[in-house]
Image (cartoon, rainbow, N blue to C red):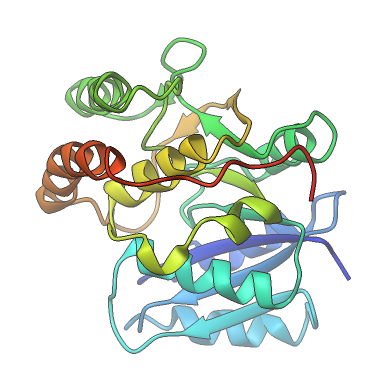
Length: 248
């Protein structure tokens, strides 16, 4: 069995589903994939289920009843992974904004270089974003500056969604208490891991905007992140975080 699970949430990703699955499962390091599909109306789940015949035991799907949010999709996937004892659990988008071969860099950071959480970072080595409008680049970059300043976390790309977690990180974080669902979910997970004392590293990547399908971004997601950061900071003053040991 592979010790590596890539969780890919989907909602209407029929243009990308087969290609991203094939690209990840063709990598030299063995990965399994869990698709968490939120009741796509375009046949995404059917595409995945047809591919399961070809990738038996390596490709899995969990279908949910509705569009329940990115954060809850990942929490669902994290619990699924822990129940099956995967050692390294990855977050990845379905739309090729994250280069599949960069999974190997994240895996190496955790499996060989001592990181507990490795972030595929757009901002740790300048700004490495391709095909985004300049306004969106500026908004995203300064959103991370804002988060870093308010929360005091030494992370350049606080809203990144391309991540490798060691199993022990997800075992220690109380997943049932993770509140947010959009960008703020990504911030909350990183902040919580930081407060628990886990080693976090940023691995520079080139982020490429999607070519196929529609973005799921909305103004509500940004609003949640802006106000959620303040809420996270205030709540952290009244919470005790168990500290991670060097090894489990």
